[in-house]
Length: 517
Image (cartoon, rainbow, N blue to C red):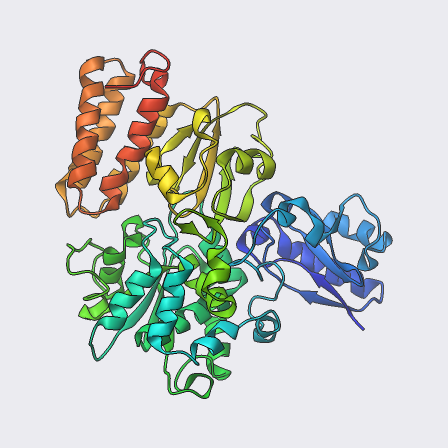
């Protein structure tokens, strides 16, 4: 019987040479007359150890990492196909501390299965949620999602069940499910990993959503820079259709749900739900005025559920295990788990899924291993380019939506980018304004003009020109953007700017530990 050897096909692993490693393993096995079955799985999320090769043994899967083509001959010499001792042998994959300390619910299959194998998906509890949903009314499905406490994982953290219930209550000849897969925040990749490494869980989640609210058509609005996700999704959709999990009469029921992938426009602002809908309709990605809400008048003017990838990919386990099972994780009003993405100046970057309640300090040091440079971590940006910069004094704040609100910060999509003590926070504040100026759709003046003026004011501050006057001006400008912008792009740009100014005033020429303004 052929021995299974797993080599990831995830984008991160590919960028680090996984294909060449896989080719070298196949060639070496052939050369030695050994029979193996090469499985291209998803990444386990330990990015600093990619490419990670796993071998199926009687005791479980044994990991070797990082494995490059030059390492392959010595692995075979060490009998790695039976878990033999080698300098790259990490032991049983499931016993790795990085993984054992996590609570993987949404990412339960990622790194374990062949992403596009429907048989693999079904063998690992796939489509159990959908089968339960087919035995329930739409209202019962919506109530289950509501009771689980699931909130939007795209940034706004709006309760998913409330959004679904609004669409369920609308009378219309057509309703839509739209997945916001335009993952554009810096340091984020959890959406990409789901789509590349477990695409069926997203398909199943969207199908359940369609059944719940009475929608028959779904669209995945996919970031244009994700070609591997596009390929995996389209292949998985095709296989799901052939097996009766999509299309008419799903699993022999009276329900219909069709699904398509649409490439995004390459604009950050299209991550905002109304701008996304404009783009899906073939228009320029401009933010819409609200009301009406997309749940009432969304895509093509019809009731539309718009959810993030992680939100929809979490629905299957809720319908499989029950609302209380999911709600038992987390703290306060932040129920369940959050896939956290560690990036920036850290020794160990990658995907960590934990229940709400862990702290930044735990993530940065227990999982991240501290800074890659060996210098003190000075600042951490949480929540993408519009997230606040947090100083070391706030590293013990629990990861919880409400707790972050108390310190004027956002969890957003769960991206964490670390900076050591060589960072110039005035430059980071300038970058926030510059980013907004480049990505603004231009529809509202506070965002379009305010961001451009912001860059100019920061330049004056750092050059020492009218210092006190311009410190006051940048605060006034931020207040205007915060309260006058049409969407979160302009409205949240002050978060990184003012947090940098408040916590790292010395980089702006202010006395240390003195808040600006």
